[in-house]
Amino acid sequence: MNKNFNGKRASQSVMFFLFRLMSYMVVGILFCIIGFIVIRGLGVINWEFLTTAPEDGMTKGGIFPAIVGTFYLVVGSMLVAFPIGVMSGIYMSEYASNKHIKRVIRVMTNNLGGIPSIVFGLFGMALFVNKLKFGDSIIAGSFTLGLLALPLIIRVTEEALQAIPDSFRQGSLALGATKLQTIRKVVLPAAFPNIMTGLILSIGRVSGETAPILFTAAAYFLPNLPNSVFNQVMALPYHLYVIATSGTDLEATRPMAFGTALVLIIIVLLMNLIANFIRRKYSK
Image (cartoon, rainbow, N blue to C red; front, side, top):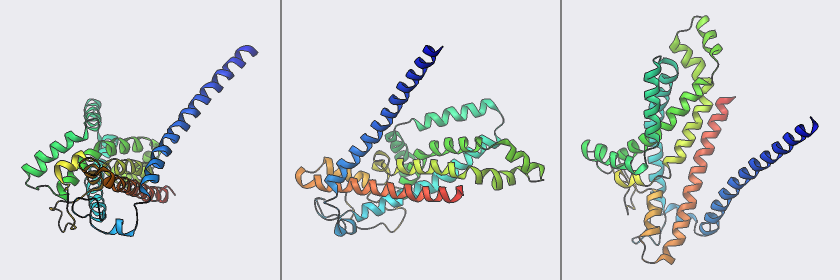
């Protein structure tokens, strides 16, 4: 008996060690990537780099229009995806009673989430840019990125609502509340911190996408800020792609590329911190 028990404990210790080692490896790889970008990009970042427009050739100047454009596209995409995704998740969790319909919707949502981003870009160009006559614009890019983020928000919202115990719903209904009041006043506030997780993940995904905005919104060189949602805009991911691949003088463009990459990482980190702050506030 003791031998079997000791053998099981030894196997468990080995497995825990492997799990811990894999976790440390993931964290180590993350720090290696971030450190690689920070070391090469930190020396480029200064006030002029963050507040001025790029000059012709994009080996000089700053990235301020690209920062503003990225912010516009991320906010626009979340304004499109978050309400639709949350309402779809509420329908899937609280209202859809037919198991076959729910299964079909869930399968289609998962398939939509697995579509490559460049396909979303082509679809956005065909629908929003050409068919709806939005042209290459902020609104076309926002709708395209919103579609890209939609499956993730739907899945996270549905899972967050299903994690709320049925006793919450039953207690509210027993007190005379309607189903809509129960969802709005009881279920949704309790699930909101976990729903924010979907928003955080979506922000991280859409802020770094290049292919969708390449076909719908991004401009190669646009030093002026947009004054309408129907204007083109510069964006950090596309700007990084351009200066890293199309420059004739690689030694001149490489520092700016690393600086742009570091700024993009910082923006994503700040957005995640803000979303986490909101999540913790609602958790309390």
